[in-house]
Length: 153
Length: 404
Figure (cartoon, rainbow over the protein chains, first blue to last red):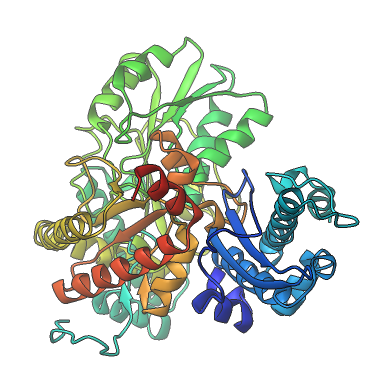
């Protein structure tokens, strides 16, 4: 099975030319999540203004092509959104925006969703802003319910 | 195949450095196979002279392969390749000797064709000991001897490892097995044609080899079975392969395997020297130019074409895709490159941590590669590793810790 040929053009594009790679100095929020099984680690930085709008997002990822592409897409999807809107960016939305992922790589999209949540949580803690529906983030995506649903499917 | 020196930005043909995965069929091999597809297509079991000619050539091929291993021709059985040979050797011996004992010894670094066969036998009531290896991938003969029990019937230890290239002390291990009355099988898929093998001198009872690793065709291999060894038949049917492995004789495949063996024998020293020169140049360049790199495997007891690295803080699949975009073929033991998301069991067995093993790259050269290609690959690697590290949160943390 060739990994390269199983990726959509969009995945290859976001992997080859990842958007928003890097760090934000003094970020409003930063979060890191990983997955012990595959070993991938994703870190997301958010710059959020007083109106709770995400002005900028940056990421760093240690992982496969799908992990890099989902990180890149996740930053694109949250920039310009309010924190409440950003909370609604699900792993499915990231995946759809990339025209899908090979089945074995679907868990990577969960990493992206959780990295957003983790950075939002850090922001909400630091700024004392309450975000409705935001739960304390996990450090490993295997702690999420979605991961288990995925394994069963 | 010598290419002119490359200038920056030159478009490059495919650079193939995954020769442990498979090799290109040699023109001489292709020529003889073509003959057996188009002209000498008879079923070797036929009664007419058209078939007799073919079966005589197959027996000649068997003799040539036997000679190459220091064996007799009635000890060579043609199969469909390495995995079939490994399966047959292990299941065939286990089944034939189950009244004598139920214990098998192997290692933690075997190919899946051996490991998964052993796991299958465990589910059928056999007990299997998986020997540890040291940091270079070597099996300790003392540990092997200590693992032998009265009920041990078989030991299966690979000749050379497919990922890190380490060559095991087969002669010594075989001697220990024989001193304890244990049958000794070796998976020599990576070693056959690359390392001189004499089955009697090296105390080998069964040996698996494959055609496509030595510029032969895919779908053909051998199992050497020493005369007198009790083993169950693999495929029941006609009388081909002395009734042990039925099925119409794969004449084109066998003739291809034979010519590939002949070429490997004639060119072994010259080819190994050429591969070693390229490999050593590759390793030296990579270690000089790319920091935080680990060179895996044994420094000397090693296949001539194998180089295996771990680049810290990065992940192997990303590296492979970027190499692919630069027309370079390599492989990785990263969890992300395996369909099952399992990190290479070989890299874990030599003591690497998961996150280090994640950044592994195996490059296996051929004598057809050039120094210019090596330079191109190292240039590409330097750029790619740098790019991926800049993207890596682990590298960011490392630099922060180092105060850089």
